[in-house]
Length: 389
Image 1 (cartoon, helix red, strand yellow):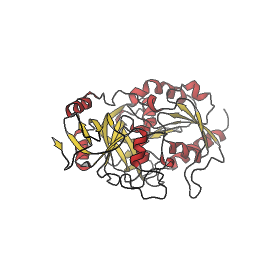
Image 2: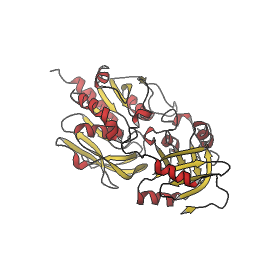
Image 3: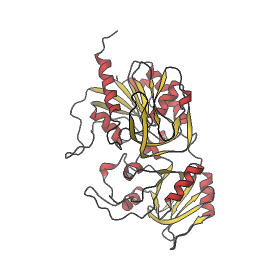
Image 4: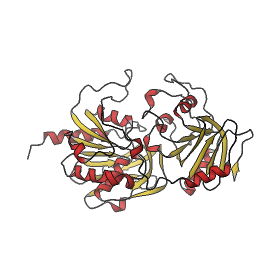
């Protein structure tokens, strides 16, 4: 089946099952193949498109007003967009925001990302929820020339995300220092003025605002590539180790990440993980991960802290999850999703080792989850204050 617009389409989205959505293309021209997901956030489209966790995915935005505040370099989570493309209901309008430094359409075109507007995103989202995240081919041609059979075949040939290590594709090429803190009115982003703890952040696809939150918590942050060994991590004599977010199948990334984490866990160091870092820590501790039907992508996900009873409104972006039923003895489930009960946090009993599935730096609460960065800093301070021996 297909959805045909009243005027000649300049873009189309072909699903592996043969369904085709037509619309109006904007941004770059060409063709891309990926997994299709949907995101329910009402703001943050630029941050979403530049989140490395979206590698290998085209994002359907359920909120129709995409592009209305333009773009600004300050909102990039990494140097370039990582999501393969975007699907929206309405074409982007001229931006109306004092921070806008350009339009979404031009920004996508410069960065080589394809987008399609005029799509029935409600229908598309229902299909994703019911059938699971499909493989798709997204094409933009100003002349409207599409080989539908070839696009459907390209979607069917997409290998999917299971079994794929995408962290290698988005990690940094070499180590670097980070000292920029969170945005604050009226100064904006400021350099760190007081570092109290040395932290090594392992970059599986780290978002800049996570690093800013670490810096704002008093951390002197050294970022290492995803493939860093335990020897390379410990050579920096860190007070704590942070495991970042990232894309792909955690079991595949775990082939090289899990041995490193297990060796680091032999040291008495605070360890904190987010998103893929949460999954990496769980695998290192002996748990398993599973592919979700359509994942969690949005800024309105309620998560319950089982230790305090507090409910946090969180931002999420993951298509895999830790299987809470496989957590070994001595590892407690600390947070769960109130949407579906899936695991959203763990902690090692009696040790400052923990992680969460959601993004505490993304601020949908707006500050419900900042305590995690403060806890990490407090644990490092407590370790340094403890008597030797």
